[in-house]
Image 1: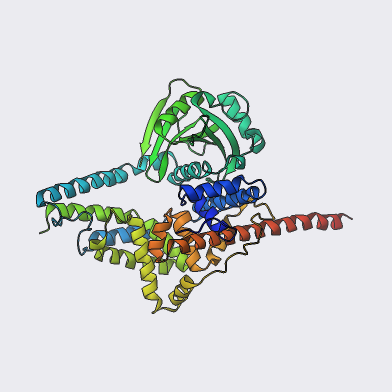
Image 2 (image 1 turned 90 degrees about the horizontal axis):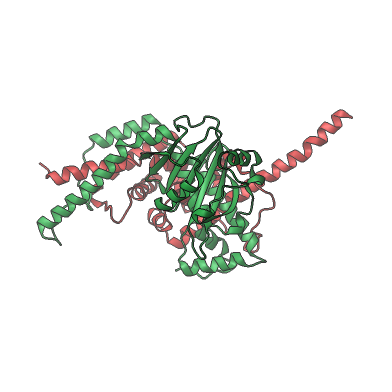
Length: 287
Length: 197
């Protein structure tokens, strides 16, 4: 049981809040602290720094095993006998009639087998279109930054990166950040995002409905040919088990866009608002 | 001859653990600072995983936390045999003093987040292992506090305070870098000026 928020355990509560580990009452206490005029701004700054540490750490430390290690361990796993089947999938028959237990176990095993084999068979297309780690990172940033208080995102797009803002405006029209109000989302703020080594600006939007927590993120990068597999005129729907939010990606020749929402339907409606071409080819790539 | 269902289960289990090789190797590397030792630890972890397949319950544990727990145990069990791992073991038990509760939350120097990669790597390596493990499991591998508590066999409250202290130490280190950079920038024009005159 976590002690109630006080000055001694403030940092622990803030970190757990940022990690989404507090229950509703504990999170409400942190929200109240953040809203305090005197103490709130320092805590918000602290939270922002901690979020940035997480993001940079994921990018920098998330390195794969060398290919020779992976190959050797995979070969060992393939050749080494295991002592017993995993218990979740094993057929014990102690609590279920034997036939039902067998059927359930088979169904579970088949479901997992399909998922796993799909993930193996369809891994290549994602990697061929976009770096999977980038997809994972922007998805995490969308989830984490959208949890932070609004006044942490107080910058205009023009202030954050005037050049990129101008390129985006020439693609999508309007002034400042793209206007998503017709899709039910208002612009909250822009900020440089460390999800990629390539300079990226994160544009955060929240639902215009009172009390609604839904968020939309657009990530924009200058298009210097870094993702040649993205064909202009196509929108790519990228799905990956490490990315909890649906991701759309496209390029205009000037700008690379990533659009993330909390669910597929919202994402499609925002895409219709933001994408200049009324009819686009949507290409699905999935892990 | 094993039943048809058992063959399928075993194949699925192996695919699931193969998919985690990167994560297990990464954690081993960050814990030992040695590729050779990491390589060795990963091999032993997977051997134990295969031998313990019967104890694995997909519904209760994710594959990743389960493998991390085995890796953690391998490091502990080897600690008695090898000096470096003994150090790691001591390090895993080490505690960090809590930050001053009266210390300001705001860092005095704004961090340039685009240029901190190397400093962050070094700062993570300097963390006591118990804190490094908690930080890596949470921030890099995405485990929940309860899963980290299970892997490291400490209460959730301990995980929470380790994570908070680890991140505070990292932010402090990066703020230190920002202060150094500011100092260097402040000194550079002074030198130029002297040369010109």
